[in-house]
Length: 305
Image (cartoon, rainbow, N blue to C red; front, side, top):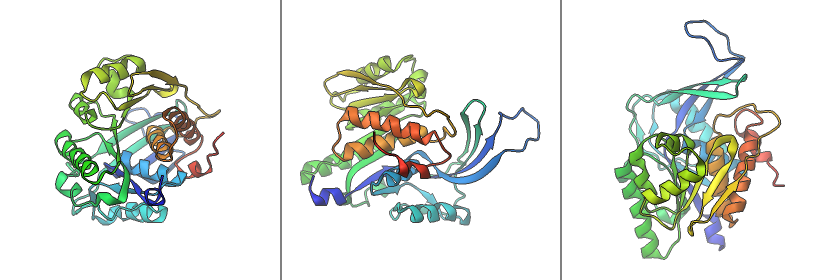
C-alpha cells in the first residue's frame, strides 16, 4: 500500500448519540426507586463508536452524520476533538440531540437500551455528495434509510470506476428491518447481526450467511455474521464457510458496544492488509478485551497474541 493510501481515512457513516449509562447490580423492578452503582455520560451511536475504537487501535478516521447544534451536544463534539475524530463534514441542526438511557446489569451482563430519537434527521445523499471522496480508503455504513444510502454507495462505485480508486465499502445490517437487505447488494463487506437474522427466521449463523447470499444480488461480497458468545461465521466471495470462535474475558464487565468494537477492529485490520480470517479472529479478540472493562479507553492497550 502506498504512503498516500496509508494517509487516507476510514469514514464511518451513521448516528452519533448521547448515552446516559447506569451501572446496576441487578435490573430494577418496575415502579421502584433504585440507586445505581455508578453512572456516566458517553458518546454513543454505532458509527460513532466505530470511530472511537478505530482511533484506539491507531487508524485515522472521520465520523459523518447529522449532529445537533444544541449546547447539550457540546460534550459529544468535545469528545470527538479530544480523541482525534474528525466530524467537520457533519451537517448540524437546531434540534435536541438523540440520546439513549442504558442499564448495564452486572448480574447478567446484559445491557438494556432505551433510545429517544424524537424524529432527529438522518444523513441524506445531498449531505454525502459534498464530501471529498479523495480523502478516504474505506467507507463504512450503518444500515439505515435504504433509498438515500443506496445513492451514497452508487456515488462511491462511480468514483472508484472514474478514478481507478479502490475505496472499500462495508455495511452493517443490525436493525430488525427486512428492507435493509438491499444495502448489501453493492458493497465489499457485510456485517450481519444476530438480531436481524433471528427476526428473519434464520436460527443459526451458518444459515444466516447462506440465506443472505440467496436474498441479495451481490455474489462477491464477504459476509461476516456475529452470533454473540458463539463467535462469528464468514462466507467469502467463493461461498467458502468458516467459523471463528469468540474470545470472552475471564470476567465480563461491560457489554455495551461490543458489536461496534468488533466491526471497527475487523475494518482496522482489513485496511492494514490482513486476511479476512485473521481480521475476524483479531476482531473477536479485541471485542473480548473490550468486555473486560467499562468503555473503550482500555482498547488502546490491546496486544495482538
